[in-house]
Length: 512
Image (cartoon, rainbow, N blue to C red):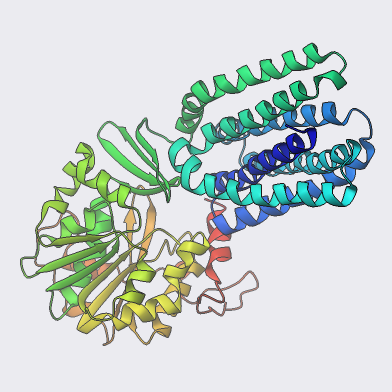
């Protein structure tokens, strides 16, 4: 192989590694810090800024180009390989905010090191006889083509199969292998070749150790983030699933966010299900958007009048866990074995958009809070219009709408958005000890009157008298929200083109 071809191959491969690190940092930030769009935007911006800084620094590298390239790859190997492993440790042991500082710092540094690579390789290709125009074009082609390959590898292979920690070590290993290959290929030009090669071998061994033991150690760090012992963890194509259990209290977390605690989830699910069923004129056809844990299904199965229950959940692995995990199955009382249940693994927005023929008497929207762009679309005017269009005459909708105590403005903004879809609403909130005060929006085409509503099935918490009390809100959390100057805040409708509640949500929960 000609030396120029070796340089082009090296540039392509390290570009694959660079783009993987770039999106890896975004994924890690999304998982630990929330708001995926924000984290991907910040990490990609910082990485590109770092590359610009690195390209500027590369002007000062004029001698020993191959050796400089090799040590840059060694540095990327060490920092990139340890990045997500250390990030979990920082999150577990240091004060809040340090994890974000660490992530953004390591992103900028690795970006800067990546930015030094290509100018050095272009200069080296020119040095061995390739014209500057050709060397630049070919190295950049290898870089851009490698970027596409790296993105596809991360999405379809590395993240789902190896997770964040192991992926970082694997990619770093490739950086170091390329450095050792180039070092050996150009060894006649390298003074003290054996010393530099031996250093690379030591770094290689460190990364191999990280591949085999880093994830297990990071798991102990992650355990520190949860109150109870982790009994199940899985990184799916969509999210991180974690189950914890201590003294009979089973808890489900998705991307670090608590979904239920078995000690009090019945308060949440009885409030989610029974008022909406009671206010629907008929109850034959039910749609559940979210609710892959099967707990809402458990409550619905108390009604013999229901003929069909369609559950739409994006992540099939959550549903599979709810069908097969003994602890979850005991909690949902084998709700997925009911012949009336049909499960569809699809995005809720796309399901409603593509389903034009079926109407539902009861629609339950049991989705995670709107803390990122992907979830925000499920709290928009456009989404609620799709929901309304699938609602049968006399039907009812119940929406989980975050906490009116912790995120008052977000809760009432959701209510306003539902009303903007030409629906009448009734507001409820319930104390769930593991969550705190939690809010729901009940919606119909007709006026809602819970005074004439009665609960006719067996419950652990909800009674007719309790139900009426759930509609009362204290002055400090009602919809007449005042700012610090005592002026009433004007709520906005949340839409796809103007997602107003994401920033409000993040700001509201920052203190809790």
